[in-house]
Length: 169
Image 1 (spheres, helix red, strand yellow):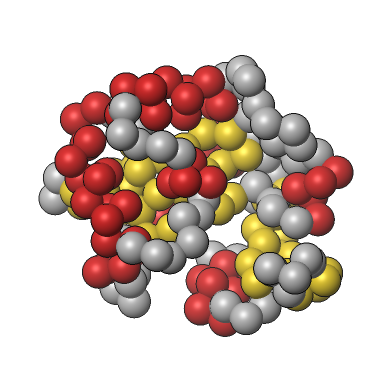
Image 2 (spheres, helix red, strand yellow):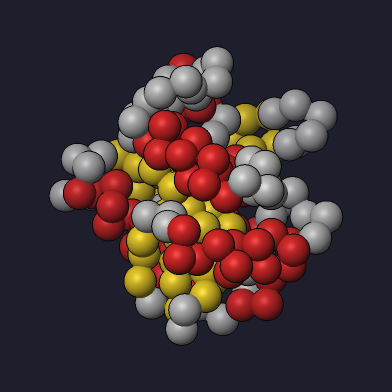
């Protein structure tokens, strides 16, 4: 499996991924962008990577696609730094896997490869958060070296958020 930056080559796979998500929350946030104009979607993802036209309280972030046998099987978003807002609710990494590949180890591969990118960016203390109501996500984070740092109460939508930290060398 290969972790890549988004490209036009995978447009059909991306559309299929979005369709497979159905009514699920589209997370990380680039999955929520309008994908009707795919070139515009790619341009917007690149702008965010370069810190251009960021929404309020957002920071520059890189979106990655995990490719297996020519298909997108996972999406991750790596924030280049944290601000006060996302330090407590958001963290450095958000990820999603295609529903049809869940419970197959793809999530762990996606997390490990995204952690490698964070390390390459010089991030030494990687914050990863998940909702307490999602034990599968917490288990994934812990299996990749995450240590529970704290729990915070979010808004009505998110409930209690668990904050994990992975320290790299």
